[in-house]
Length: 467
Image 1: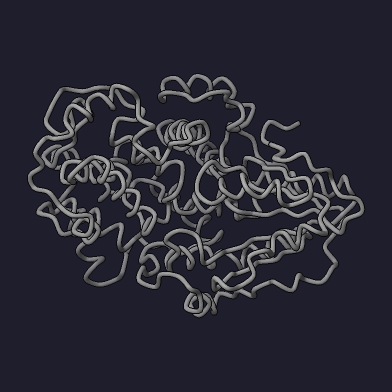
Image 2 (image 1 turned 180 degrees about the vertical axis):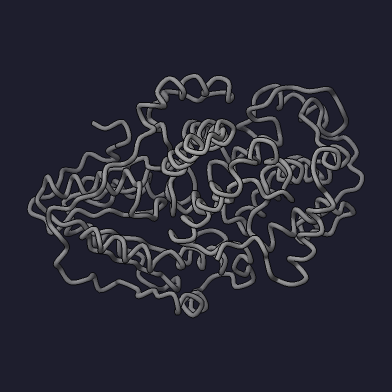
């Protein structure tokens, strides 16, 4: 069987059946999607049409206007492209807790088999643990999140230097486009009764009807959906890739891709981004090596970590040297010290840190390099490292469009020493790497960044937003 495919139960394929069902949980796209391609292949083998089911519930942790809006903005184009392929499409918006929560199971009663996305964190991981035994039909999970399939690795890797050569050894085998989806049997059945009509004009009204947290507004900088993902990729290739290696660590320079929200919600794949970056770099005689290192090696190290470590959202996942130094410095004096609420609302003495947190509140994303500094300061200012960790996860869960992602869990724990090494001893941190304000001022344009976030907060207008 394909290395990307994991059968998650022993149930047989159902005969007879009306269709093959693809439940898109994390890879919400019609393009470059191994799971969709596998489902289409199964449908063709069984001489059945394909039904694509996509859902959005009001009950996931920290469900709010920002997350709901981003997902819903992608639905009209998703439906259009799936139907152009010849697939049926059903989107179900569960608005209130009392609404039907068994639509997947009802659709599965007429399916030959169910195909879904293989994903190691958040509710997709929970679903893929709980659903297979209850669904009553063959249930296969397909990895379309990584360039090199997660199943290629038999164990947890401990750092980039251990996984890098293993990825490089097989990269050319997997760094190739997904074959176009061709369905032999077009969908001609009625649309399922649970379908929620989503248009470009009714997203805000649908969000308002949902039983979710309406206190987190949509991002000022990112619109959801495949079209915006494609525009963001194009902008990166044409205006930023040539500057990436030299300027990526200075947020005010805007040299990074800004694709993480679209990658997290599966509206674009790292595979197609990697192929596009490699192709553009070759055509224009540029270097894409450092970008591909972050996109593939570092990101897939995070997927490997969350696949094999069940405590990926806990400090218990940290290596022994970190545990030792944390215990040694657990009672060190913290001065100043801030509450979780003060941190959430950017009420500290540090103008750079406040700007980072305000960027999270307004944009729903912090630049990767400054997020390291952001996390280190939460460690320094919290009553304990355990509380610091919980604060960082809470802020990501509530505000970050690229949160609840393997990259998030690994990046947060990196602040505490994951995938790192011991450094010089100091208070609070022990031998965990430290980052300070002076270093940020020396290496990056701190005043330019603060000025940009001040303007964003004052005007509500982001000049870097893709239109």
